[in-house]
Length: 360
Image 1 (cartoon, rainbow, N blue to C red):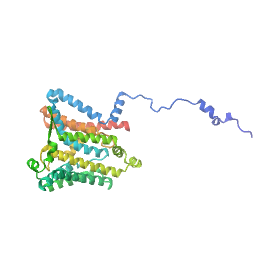
Image 2: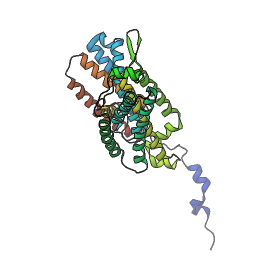
Image 3: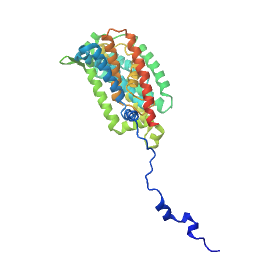
Image 4: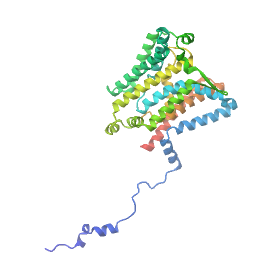
Protein backbone atom coordinates (compact mmCIF):
# COMPACT_ATOMS: atom_id res chain seq x y z
CA UNK A 1 0.00 0.00 0.00
CA UNK A 2 1.38 3.45 -0.92
CA UNK A 3 2.00 6.14 1.73
CA UNK A 4 -0.81 8.76 1.88
CA UNK A 5 0.00 12.14 0.52
CA UNK A 6 0.77 15.04 2.86
CA UNK A 7 -2.44 16.74 1.81
CA UNK A 8 -4.40 13.94 3.45
CA UNK A 9 -2.48 14.57 6.68
CA UNK A 10 -3.12 18.21 7.55
CA UNK A 11 -1.53 17.76 10.98
CA UNK A 12 1.81 17.32 9.17
CA UNK A 13 1.58 20.64 7.38
CA UNK A 14 3.11 22.63 10.24
CA UNK A 15 4.27 25.58 8.17
CA UNK A 16 0.89 26.07 6.54
CA UNK A 17 -0.85 25.90 9.90
CA UNK A 18 1.50 28.45 11.43
CA UNK A 19 1.34 30.84 8.49
CA UNK A 20 -2.42 30.74 8.50
CA UNK A 21 -2.82 31.25 12.26
CA UNK A 22 -3.82 34.52 13.87
CA UNK A 23 -0.99 36.82 14.90
CA UNK A 24 -3.11 38.84 17.35
CA UNK A 25 -1.81 38.98 20.92
CA UNK A 26 -4.09 37.23 23.38
CA UNK A 27 -6.02 39.58 25.63
CA UNK A 28 -7.86 38.38 28.70
CA UNK A 29 -9.39 41.66 29.81
CA UNK A 30 -10.47 43.99 27.06
CA UNK A 31 -12.89 46.00 29.14
CA UNK A 32 -11.72 49.42 30.24
CA UNK A 33 -12.00 50.06 33.96
CA UNK A 34 -14.69 52.44 35.06
CA UNK A 35 -13.74 55.50 37.16
CA UNK A 36 -15.19 53.72 40.19
CA UNK A 37 -12.99 50.66 39.58
CA UNK A 38 -9.93 52.85 39.14
CA UNK A 39 -10.74 54.55 42.46
CA UNK A 40 -11.17 51.13 44.05
CA UNK A 41 -7.75 50.06 42.82
CA UNK A 42 -6.24 53.29 44.12
CA UNK A 43 -7.68 52.69 47.58
CA UNK A 44 -6.43 49.10 47.50
CA UNK A 45 -2.89 50.24 46.73
CA UNK A 46 -3.02 53.11 49.26
CA UNK A 47 -4.60 51.82 52.51
CA UNK A 48 -4.11 55.15 54.30
CA UNK A 49 -6.05 57.09 51.66
CA UNK A 50 -9.53 56.44 53.06
CA UNK A 51 -8.81 57.59 56.65
CA UNK A 52 -6.88 60.60 55.30
CA UNK A 53 -9.88 61.63 53.21
CA UNK A 54 -12.22 61.17 56.19
CA UNK A 55 -9.84 63.16 58.43
CA UNK A 56 -9.69 66.08 55.99
CA UNK A 57 -13.48 66.10 55.53
CA UNK A 58 -13.95 65.99 59.32
CA UNK A 59 -11.65 68.96 59.82
CA UNK A 60 -13.42 70.94 57.09
CA UNK A 61 -16.87 70.09 58.48
CA UNK A 62 -16.11 71.04 62.09
CA UNK A 63 -14.23 74.11 60.89
CA UNK A 64 -17.31 75.24 58.96
CA UNK A 65 -19.56 74.60 61.97
CA UNK A 66 -17.36 76.02 64.74
CA UNK A 67 -15.47 78.68 62.83
CA UNK A 68 -11.89 79.79 63.39
CA UNK A 69 -11.68 78.67 67.03
CA UNK A 70 -11.54 75.04 65.88
CA UNK A 71 -8.50 75.77 63.71
CA UNK A 72 -6.61 77.58 66.45
CA UNK A 73 -3.14 76.18 67.18
CA UNK A 74 -4.18 75.33 70.73
CA UNK A 75 -7.25 73.34 69.62
CA UNK A 76 -5.37 71.39 66.96
CA UNK A 77 -2.50 70.51 69.28
CA UNK A 78 -5.02 69.59 71.97
CA UNK A 79 -6.28 66.89 69.59
CA UNK A 80 -2.73 65.55 69.33
CA UNK A 81 -2.37 65.50 73.12
CA UNK A 82 -5.64 63.61 73.51
CA UNK A 83 -4.75 60.89 70.99
CA UNK A 84 -1.08 60.45 71.98
CA UNK A 85 -1.70 57.43 74.23
CA UNK A 86 -4.24 55.89 71.86
CA UNK A 87 -1.81 56.35 68.97
CA UNK A 88 1.08 54.67 70.80
CA UNK A 89 -1.05 51.69 71.82
CA UNK A 90 -2.59 51.69 68.34
CA UNK A 91 0.91 51.26 66.90
CA UNK A 92 1.33 48.11 69.00
CA UNK A 93 -2.08 46.88 67.87
CA UNK A 94 -1.21 47.63 64.24
CA UNK A 95 1.75 45.25 64.25
CA UNK A 96 -0.36 42.42 65.65
CA UNK A 97 -3.33 42.96 63.33
CA UNK A 98 -1.01 43.03 60.30
CA UNK A 99 -0.23 39.37 61.17
CA UNK A 100 -4.00 38.62 61.07
CA UNK A 101 -4.07 38.50 64.88
CA UNK A 102 -5.48 40.76 67.57
CA UNK A 103 -4.23 41.80 71.00
CA UNK A 104 -6.87 42.46 73.65
CA UNK A 105 -4.23 42.78 76.38
CA UNK A 106 -2.48 45.94 75.17
CA UNK A 107 -4.29 48.22 77.63
CA UNK A 108 -3.67 45.95 80.62
CA UNK A 109 0.02 45.56 79.71
CA UNK A 110 0.33 49.34 79.44
CA UNK A 111 -1.19 49.89 82.89
CA UNK A 112 0.85 47.13 84.57
CA UNK A 113 4.07 48.54 83.07
CA UNK A 114 3.27 51.99 84.40
CA UNK A 115 2.43 50.58 87.85
CA UNK A 116 5.74 48.68 87.95
CA UNK A 117 7.61 51.86 87.03
CA UNK A 118 5.89 53.82 89.79
CA UNK A 119 6.14 51.14 92.46
CA UNK A 120 9.82 50.43 91.81
CA UNK A 121 10.74 54.12 91.84
CA UNK A 122 8.63 55.35 94.77
CA UNK A 123 8.24 52.36 97.09
CA UNK A 124 11.46 50.44 96.41
CA UNK A 125 13.73 53.46 95.98
CA UNK A 126 15.08 52.26 92.62
CA UNK A 127 16.50 55.07 90.42
CA UNK A 128 14.00 56.41 87.89
CA UNK A 129 15.77 55.22 84.71
CA UNK A 130 16.13 51.71 86.13
CA UNK A 131 12.48 51.70 87.16
CA UNK A 132 11.53 52.65 83.61
CA UNK A 133 13.67 49.79 82.32
CA UNK A 134 11.89 47.36 84.67
CA UNK A 135 8.55 48.52 83.26
CA UNK A 136 9.77 47.84 79.73
CA UNK A 137 10.95 44.37 80.78
CA UNK A 138 7.49 43.59 82.17
CA UNK A 139 5.84 44.77 78.96
CA UNK A 140 8.24 42.78 76.80
CA UNK A 141 7.77 39.60 78.85
CA UNK A 142 3.98 39.84 78.62
CA UNK A 143 4.23 40.31 74.86
CA UNK A 144 6.66 37.41 74.56
CA UNK A 145 4.27 35.09 76.41
CA UNK A 146 1.47 36.11 74.03
CA UNK A 147 3.68 35.45 71.02
CA UNK A 148 4.94 32.12 72.33
CA UNK A 149 1.42 30.83 72.96
CA UNK A 150 0.24 31.98 69.52
CA UNK A 151 3.29 30.83 67.53
CA UNK A 152 4.46 27.71 69.35
CA UNK A 153 1.35 26.36 71.07
CA UNK A 154 -0.87 27.40 68.11
CA UNK A 155 -3.56 28.97 70.26
CA UNK A 156 -5.89 31.56 68.66
CA UNK A 157 -4.66 35.13 69.26
CA UNK A 158 -8.11 36.24 70.43
CA UNK A 159 -8.22 33.59 73.17
CA UNK A 160 -4.58 34.08 74.22
CA UNK A 161 -4.80 37.85 74.56
CA UNK A 162 -8.24 37.71 76.17
CA UNK A 163 -6.80 35.45 78.87
CA UNK A 164 -3.67 37.59 79.17
CA UNK A 165 -5.86 40.68 79.56
CA UNK A 166 -7.64 39.11 82.56
CA UNK A 167 -4.40 37.80 84.10
CA UNK A 168 -2.50 41.07 83.75
CA UNK A 169 -5.46 43.12 84.92
CA UNK A 170 -5.80 41.00 88.08
CA UNK A 171 -2.03 41.06 88.67
CA UNK A 172 -2.10 44.82 88.34
CA UNK A 173 -4.72 45.27 91.07
CA UNK A 174 -3.17 42.66 93.35
CA UNK A 175 0.32 44.12 93.02
CA UNK A 176 -0.69 47.77 93.38
CA UNK A 177 -3.37 47.11 96.02
CA UNK A 178 -5.43 49.55 93.92
CA UNK A 179 -3.22 52.38 95.21
CA UNK A 180 -2.59 55.51 93.19
CA UNK A 181 0.89 57.03 93.40
CA UNK A 182 0.51 60.79 93.65
CA UNK A 183 2.18 63.33 91.43
CA UNK A 184 4.06 64.84 94.41
CA UNK A 185 5.68 61.48 95.17
CA UNK A 186 6.80 61.11 91.57
CA UNK A 187 8.32 64.59 91.55
CA UNK A 188 10.29 63.73 94.68
CA UNK A 189 11.38 60.19 93.80
CA UNK A 190 11.42 59.88 90.01
CA UNK A 191 10.64 63.01 87.96
CA UNK A 192 11.72 61.14 84.83
CA UNK A 193 8.43 59.25 84.96
CA UNK A 194 6.61 62.51 84.17
CA UNK A 195 8.92 63.39 81.28
CA UNK A 196 6.37 62.81 78.53
CA UNK A 197 3.94 65.21 80.19
CA UNK A 198 6.25 68.21 79.86
CA UNK A 199 5.19 70.91 77.41
CA UNK A 200 6.94 72.36 74.40
CA UNK A 201 5.37 75.65 73.29
CA UNK A 202 5.59 76.85 69.71
CA UNK A 203 3.64 80.10 69.49
CA UNK A 204 0.05 79.25 70.35
CA UNK A 205 0.65 75.53 69.90
CA UNK A 206 1.33 73.36 72.94
CA UNK A 207 3.03 70.03 72.29
CA UNK A 208 3.92 67.51 74.94
CA UNK A 209 6.86 65.15 74.67
CA UNK A 210 4.29 62.36 74.55
CA UNK A 211 3.03 63.74 71.22
CA UNK A 212 6.61 63.93 69.95
CA UNK A 213 7.18 60.32 71.08
CA UNK A 214 4.12 59.27 69.07
CA UNK A 215 5.43 61.03 65.99
CA UNK A 216 8.88 59.45 66.30
CA UNK A 217 7.38 55.99 66.93
CA UNK A 218 5.11 56.19 63.88
CA UNK A 219 7.98 57.44 61.69
CA UNK A 220 10.30 54.63 62.80
CA UNK A 221 7.64 51.93 62.33
CA UNK A 222 6.70 53.35 58.91
CA UNK A 223 10.31 53.05 57.80
CA UNK A 224 10.71 49.56 59.26
CA UNK A 225 7.49 48.25 57.69
CA UNK A 226 8.22 49.69 54.27
CA UNK A 227 12.00 49.49 53.91
CA UNK A 228 13.27 46.46 55.84
CA UNK A 229 13.13 42.70 55.39
CA UNK A 230 11.44 42.37 58.78
CA UNK A 231 8.61 44.62 57.60
CA UNK A 232 8.16 42.70 54.35
CA UNK A 233 8.14 39.43 56.26
CA UNK A 234 5.47 40.79 58.62
CA UNK A 235 3.15 41.63 55.71
CA UNK A 236 3.87 38.25 54.14
CA UNK A 237 2.97 36.38 57.33
CA UNK A 238 -0.27 38.31 57.65
CA UNK A 239 -1.21 37.76 54.01
CA UNK A 240 -0.46 34.02 53.83
CA UNK A 241 1.65 32.37 56.57
CA UNK A 242 1.98 29.08 54.65
CA UNK A 243 3.28 30.81 51.55
CA UNK A 244 5.60 32.95 53.69
CA UNK A 245 7.05 29.84 55.31
CA UNK A 246 7.60 28.21 51.92
CA UNK A 247 9.42 31.40 50.88
CA UNK A 248 11.85 30.98 53.77
CA UNK A 249 10.27 33.21 56.43
CA UNK A 250 10.50 31.84 59.98
CA UNK A 251 6.84 32.44 60.79
CA UNK A 252 7.03 31.36 64.45
CA UNK A 253 10.00 33.61 65.19
CA UNK A 254 8.29 36.43 63.33
CA UNK A 255 5.10 36.17 65.39
CA UNK A 256 7.04 36.06 68.66
CA UNK A 257 9.03 39.15 67.70
CA UNK A 258 5.85 41.03 66.74
CA UNK A 259 4.05 40.31 70.02
CA UNK A 260 7.19 41.08 72.05
CA UNK A 261 7.64 44.41 70.27
CA UNK A 262 3.96 45.11 70.87
CA UNK A 263 4.52 44.60 74.61
CA UNK A 264 7.50 46.96 74.59
CA UNK A 265 5.46 49.63 72.81
CA UNK A 266 2.71 49.18 75.42
CA UNK A 267 5.32 49.88 78.11
CA UNK A 268 6.20 53.08 76.26
CA UNK A 269 2.50 53.92 76.30
CA UNK A 270 2.45 53.33 80.06
CA UNK A 271 5.35 55.72 80.55
CA UNK A 272 3.63 58.33 78.37
CA UNK A 273 0.38 57.83 80.29
CA UNK A 274 2.12 58.68 83.55
CA UNK A 275 3.22 61.95 82.01
CA UNK A 276 -0.26 62.59 80.62
CA UNK A 277 -2.16 62.16 83.91
CA UNK A 278 0.73 63.15 86.20
CA UNK A 279 0.35 60.15 88.50
CA UNK A 280 0.40 56.33 88.47
CA UNK A 281 -3.12 54.94 88.58
CA UNK A 282 -3.95 51.20 88.33
CA UNK A 283 -7.40 52.12 86.96
CA UNK A 284 -6.23 54.40 84.13
CA UNK A 285 -6.30 53.26 80.52
CA UNK A 286 -8.85 50.52 81.07
CA UNK A 287 -10.34 50.97 77.58
CA UNK A 288 -7.05 51.39 75.74
CA UNK A 289 -7.49 48.02 74.01
CA UNK A 290 -10.85 49.06 72.54
CA UNK A 291 -9.55 52.52 71.63
CA UNK A 292 -6.53 51.04 69.86
CA UNK A 293 -8.68 48.64 67.83
CA UNK A 294 -10.98 51.56 66.96
CA UNK A 295 -8.06 53.62 65.66
CA UNK A 296 -6.73 50.68 63.65
CA UNK A 297 -10.08 49.78 62.09
CA UNK A 298 -11.03 53.36 61.23
CA UNK A 299 -7.49 53.74 59.89
CA UNK A 300 -8.23 51.26 57.09
CA UNK A 301 -6.39 48.28 58.56
CA UNK A 302 -7.70 44.92 57.35
CA UNK A 303 -8.60 42.59 60.21
CA UNK A 304 -7.72 39.71 57.88
CA UNK A 305 -4.05 40.74 58.02
CA UNK A 306 -1.45 41.59 55.43
CA UNK A 307 -2.91 44.95 54.45
CA UNK A 308 -2.75 48.31 56.16
CA UNK A 309 -0.53 51.20 57.09
CA UNK A 310 0.83 52.64 60.32
CA UNK A 311 -0.05 56.07 58.92
CA UNK A 312 -3.63 54.93 58.49
CA UNK A 313 -3.75 54.03 62.19
CA UNK A 314 -2.51 57.53 63.06
CA UNK A 315 -5.16 59.09 60.84
CA UNK A 316 -7.78 56.86 62.48
CA UNK A 317 -6.74 58.01 65.95
CA UNK A 318 -6.84 61.64 64.80
CA UNK A 319 -10.33 61.16 63.36
CA UNK A 320 -11.56 60.01 66.77
CA UNK A 321 -9.81 62.99 68.40
CA UNK A 322 -11.37 65.43 65.92
CA UNK A 323 -14.86 64.08 66.57
CA UNK A 324 -14.39 64.15 70.34
CA UNK A 325 -13.11 67.73 70.44
CA UNK A 326 -15.43 69.04 67.73
CA UNK A 327 -18.59 67.67 69.29
CA UNK A 328 -17.48 68.82 72.74
CA UNK A 329 -16.86 72.35 71.44
CA UNK A 330 -20.26 72.25 69.75
CA UNK A 331 -21.86 71.47 73.13
CA UNK A 332 -23.48 68.20 72.07
CA UNK A 333 -24.18 65.22 74.28
CA UNK A 334 -21.07 62.98 74.59
CA UNK A 335 -23.17 59.99 73.54
CA UNK A 336 -23.24 61.40 70.00
CA UNK A 337 -19.47 60.91 69.88
CA UNK A 338 -19.77 57.20 70.64
CA UNK A 339 -22.61 56.83 68.15
CA UNK A 340 -20.70 58.47 65.30
CA UNK A 341 -17.52 56.54 66.08
CA UNK A 342 -19.56 53.33 66.01
CA UNK A 343 -20.89 54.29 62.58
CA UNK A 344 -17.34 54.99 61.41
CA UNK A 345 -16.15 51.56 62.60
CA UNK A 346 -18.90 49.72 60.69
CA UNK A 347 -18.36 51.90 57.62
CA UNK A 348 -14.60 51.29 57.73
CA UNK A 349 -15.06 47.50 57.77
CA UNK A 350 -17.62 47.71 54.94
CA UNK A 351 -15.23 49.81 52.84
CA UNK A 352 -12.41 47.34 53.54
CA UNK A 353 -14.58 44.47 52.29
CA UNK A 354 -15.40 46.46 49.14
CA UNK A 355 -11.75 47.27 48.51
CA UNK A 356 -10.67 43.64 49.07
CA UNK A 357 -12.80 42.59 46.08
CA UNK A 358 -10.02 43.99 43.90
CA UNK A 359 -7.56 41.45 45.30
CA UNK A 360 -10.12 38.68 45.03
